[in-house]
Image (tube, rainbow, N blue to C red; front, side, top):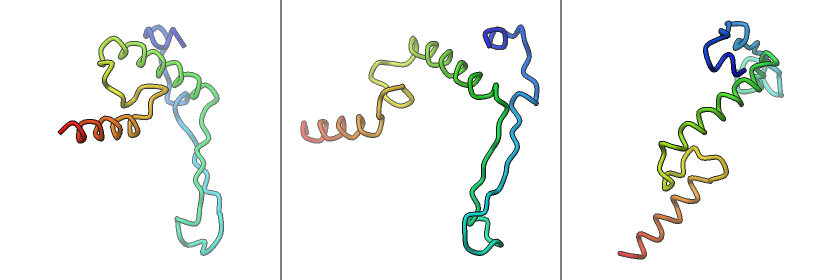
Length: 92
């Protein structure tokens, strides 16, 4: 995976392509909403994306302010911003 990230190994379409299957749940078979869609991905896709995600997060940690909550692992941005907004409203 490191080789892919360093452009030493290329990613092929096979590596990222998935097959979609529609599984019928219940009701009228003519309605799309009565199906659950499953995307079967290549077995390397998930660990590859997990590694890329870690690399991007590590790189971004030096750029994004500590006060930025959204997109940070272990933070609930919606909860944190809600608390921050409430504190700011009470300060007014």
